[in-house]
Length: 188
Image (cartoon, rainbow, N blue to C red; front, side, top):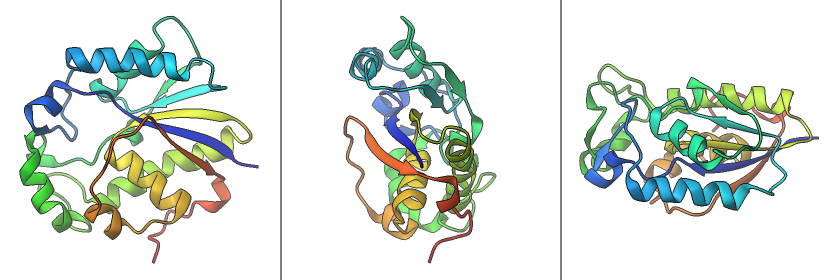
């Protein structure tokens, strides 16, 4: 058995629109982001979800609160689903982050964490999902680090490839994970 995970990114934040990489900074959703969050709720209303797991950062929490404002599955907030902690660079320009991201695969951002550390942190939450929600379908709402952890642990994509890839938004990604398949050691 395994847990079926639907992953959605948080909706568009004010930082996204301003070209800032929030990291662990809290940012509110923009007006367009609030509309998209409501659309997420309509899209997932009859999707067979038994629970929603969400990063505790404001932009993700606001996304699920708006998406399921009229009810729905229980919502659980988990700090381990947060974005990578950019430390002193939280809230910095997106262009700067994109240009230097590869530098921080294994080396932590000053005052923060590395991408590998962030993905491993998220992996801990995925292990818990696989063991507790086996046989169910759940929604996970998070960030790049959350998505990369799912890509890395569920389907084996190397982090080096994820760092180089150009992320494209879509209406959800689907994964099947079993806690016995997730090893929190670095993959080759």
